[in-house]
Image (cartoon, rainbow, N blue to C red):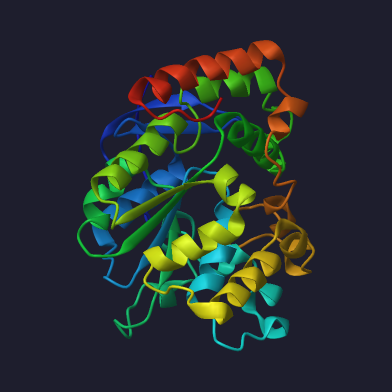
Length: 325
């Protein structure tokens, strides 16, 4: 189905015709450069491509939605902004949600309601800006490669990603009488018709860039970090040029891992709040559900699992990336 996008007067005007597909909650996704976007994020993505200028000190956290973004934001903030005598009683993560400390390019900074313009100005090129994005590398790559900024990409088992996304979007009040049935969600996920999808192409884009430019892109999985968080906190610090050294470094790593654990973060008052977040029309507490590996087994039947695994074998295993099953 073809549709011409007409933006409001205070938004970017787009005149190209794009393929449109119904997604869920009576919402449509639009196909842009082989990926699917809600209208609002499509407009914001176009603004990012035209206006965002990364600088060498920038750290960009890239991810497909619901693959561990919130946790990685907390970890990156703690790794980069640590001090020799960190006072965790006054840690900004106690009074601020991770998504407010590390804004997203397309959902915080370049949407027409943005209130985070201070993040867009570079006052001191020695300062480190930590920014996030769900935009695929196939679309954002030229922008990211225009500077020496570092990219950390996190991915997650496709089945757990789908279940986390399924739970997340159903918390929106916009669903009304149009729930996102799980069978439909599985089909759409496998066909790539989900926000910022296809998931598989999204993951492979950043993985291929990591293989090509390992000094530029660090590719990590949610499961690896969950299994050995101390190792990956150290690895991320080294990649970003702020290594943990000596016995004090070991202590710092232990403190960061403990403070940024799901149990600790999910129990902070801000993260338990039902107040609407600054980036989505959803409450802050919707970003913390379980954080478990293998949660999909509680929801997907054998047929659904085999369907997703079949796509995983084709998309991932067929390219030499043995992951997800």
